Amino acid sequence: MKQHSVSANFNQLFKQISPEEMCNDFNVFTLVGKVFPVITAGKENQSNSMTASGGGMGLLFKKPTTWCLLKADRYTLELIEKEQTYTMSYFPDEYREQVLFLGGKSGRDSEKMKEVVLTSVQTPSGDMSFKEAQLIIECKLTQITTPNLDDFYTQDAKNYLREAYKDVNNYRKYVFGEITHVWVKK
Ligand SMILES: Cc1cc2nc3c(=O)[nH]c(=O)nc-3n(C[C@H](O)[C@H](O)[C@H](O)COP(=O)(O)O)c2cc1C
Image 1: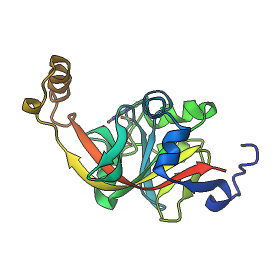
Image 2: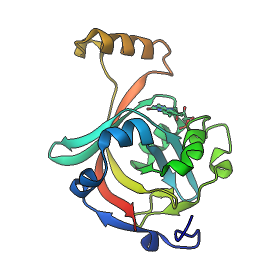
Image 3: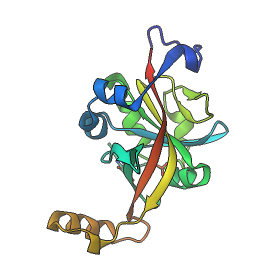
């Protein structure tokens, strides 16, 4: 981990930037579709992470906001609803294997948070992320919306949702979170 040693604390590793600065430094399509966010919810004694793809960020009701699509049965979604805060962490390519690992099995019935080769760290607000992250977005849950097929106009979207609704435990929910802090590696 070079200078980012496991013993360093959060403030030694990360500095805060604004959402606007983040968009100058990082391409949102690359973050969402190639780097993939690791979404972490819960507190120090019980946190859980999952990998996501899709979603985005922008202004919603004048607030900088992220959104993602999470299947209804995700354990991470359960913890997001419980705590109403979460982080979205983005990692350098060297940690790709671990990013994919967190998307490979559910923490509801596995010990993946103990098995993953990443170092948990608590933000000053008490949310959980990892020391190896390059970028951390902290969010406050603002909305969980279940999409309605009738509200979609393209055939592609309708097909996607029809597929997503086949299994009641499997449908996707849109999760919106106000960005409360953005942290980048020093
Ligand atoms: C690259 C990648 C992208 C993924 N994107 C999503 C996504 O956008 N939404 C989703 O619900 N699951 C997505 N998954 C699957 C979840 O990460 C996976 O089911 C995970 O085990 C859920 O963990 P949990 O039940 O502990 O929350 C993705 C997995 C991978 C590997």
